[in-house]
Image 1: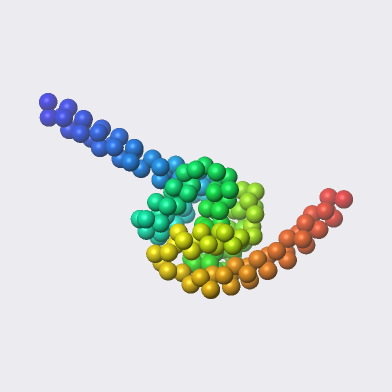
Image 2: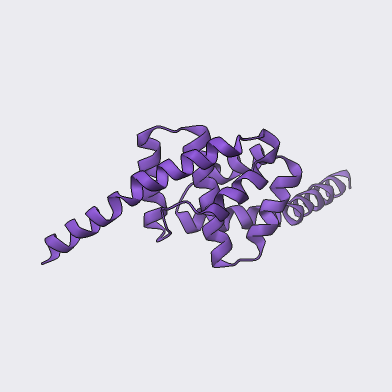
Length: 156
């Protein structure tokens, strides 16, 4: 009899845990599948955001809007490239992730604003991130036409 009660209690806790965490898991899965990444990257970002901004980020992703997924990918990109590892290897890796997902590699002002909103608990320097965004966009937007020109010359 005790075994039945313990088994019932275990099943109730398991189902409750799954139900309570379904929205965050869906949000993490949606972004990680869109980017074809391990969910660890998105979970790391969520844990760094803190409770309230993390829930706001989950709510932002919960709309299942393609534009919101694009902006969330931009926030992840900003976090990974400007805050975690600003090396050229990291930048190239994350640009490739965005390109493979068929997302724009340029960082928009809206994505930077969202990153500042969602990452408010770590208090990033808005001016520094803005300067990094401008430098990144200037550096890599100048490369895009050259790459397109090279592709066209190879195809013809």
